[in-house]
Length: 113
Length: 113
Image (cartoon, rainbow over all chains, first blue to last red; front, side):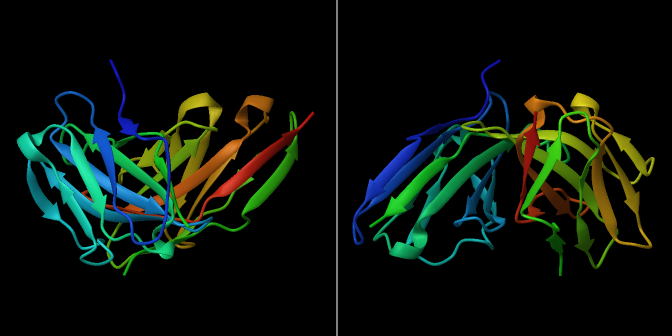
């Protein structure tokens, strides 16, 4: 069974540009989560989808971040326009049910110059 | 509010020595507690979890952790370190609904030959 995959693995962009990160959860997992780790700090929750609905987006930093999960399969996280402080590693996780283990992807390392 | 503190961003042990990674939490309600490990270029992998059953939890790869409510701790131990244990370890707390994790800042474990 394939795990959670994320694309790209690395992205380097200039301040003001737009970047879209993609997450493909494990097949059949209704719950999808986005987290972010900024330079050596703790991993922080961004938001949680149940199928295509946003269940909790309390961790989204500001309105420059837009997450979507059309059709309840893969998800995208768009940052527009990117700022320097958006640099970090963005993790995606999925779980079959709410109380199940969350399986994490390898992350996307975003660098904003 | 929930928070997790991992003492020591870097821990170094000799191969065969005891591994002890410390985690303290604060939570307004009884928490669920987790340890995840991240090997280079991989996603976070669940080592073990405490969900209000036995206070001593055994995980994969010979790791275990003990929930101590009076000390608000959930330290991770392994009797004998292997070179393959070198990785970054994250402690996390979740509330009853599991919908989001609060992570510590991580501890990098180095194992010396």
